[in-house]
Image (cartoon, rainbow over all chains, first blue to last red; front, side, top):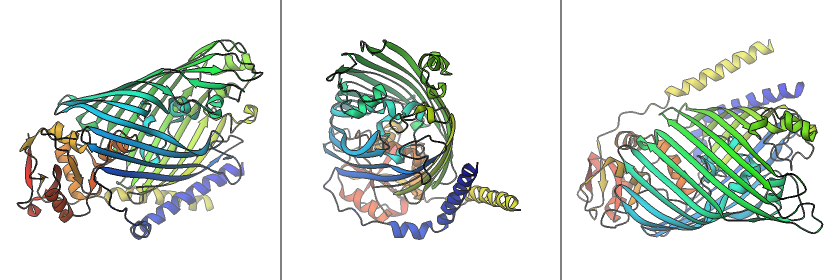
Length: 411
Length: 148
């Protein structure tokens, strides 16, 4: 009992510290000014970010490393560097390298996040039409395209119901071709992107993400489809989007593998809506995810729908200070929201099949380059906790707390 | 007693938090205009095109010249006035739109200038350039663009 109350106290101390620092923000911003970037050739832009988080959670529920230990976890770090060049007004080349450390699921290896060529076939006063070739981010909801970039997220952790790590590998990015277009008018702007691509599912982490544990064989990407339509009214006062993808993978069994050569199909559909006023923004997304496992022999074919949604409000006290509140719900199986059927069939706890998360958070933009964040989650259910960080689901507490602080720099 | 003290502290904290709401009220800005490099042939532009240009989604003028967008920092009063009055958006919306482009590779960010003098110099010397300036700063080296 003493642990949570001492945590609450430390949260207040931290917030108070944040606040007292704010008075010195002016001097701090001068101190933190790094040397100016050297002048780059016209049209070449280089941007990047580095962030470090600290997480502490109750019980034995680990999120991104050993966050339930007495010292919490520093095992959440994001580093990125990108370059883009526009040699012609119709042609752009872009690439980004990312290293993401996030518990056992993301060990921090440097990878090509995206790298593609973008050619605008038609561009005029009322719209544009173009093509992209290479590795593109998968357009899914409002946040998937930039999910590893702390400044673009509404909170330290994205709403885990939709953007949880287990399906992250499948929906992160894909190699292939996208078409995109936009039509602008006084009635608002409609834009779309749609493509054929192969998801990035190679590597042990992908198998762990898909099966919940390691197997001797390997997943291979198959031809997949992705698309999103956005509608922006009045310059983005109202933003609406519908995204849908069908991501296909096949499994090649290894030596002595219990699994046969099966296939996995992941079909997420996300509806997104946002209203932006001067001081506040309201955001909500709803996702339906179909997951199919076929012909693995070791277990029966599976076909079920996961369901997620969240409501989020953000309030900007000043351009520097922003607070957010969110209610976020995940059901692993829409037909078994309580997890009881699953518990009866497998003997695993029912609460591993849902998660209801109430989040409050604070963001402080110390300078345009430096950001500090703190947030608190009260969660009922463990559905989005990683099985890699929590190998024994029986140890988990159904109701748990998570507190996190993040510092981030960008240029 | 300790609890009472804590409550008093949290109340003070909340008051401070609400108090800062009133700190950021920007003063009225001088009259300003949208300015372009004289190489740009356009004299007028539709609002949706202006939004697309400052949203970094329209990359060329009708004659094919590349558009070069210059802005003041997000917290500059002139930037806020321009965003709200000419584009009908708030500076934070522009910043998040630019971030989405920059960090997904689907676009680039505008160039930020640090002073009105730099804005004038850059617009005057860069073919295809567009930005905004206080009327008192405008001279013959740049043209004024009207919004339809």
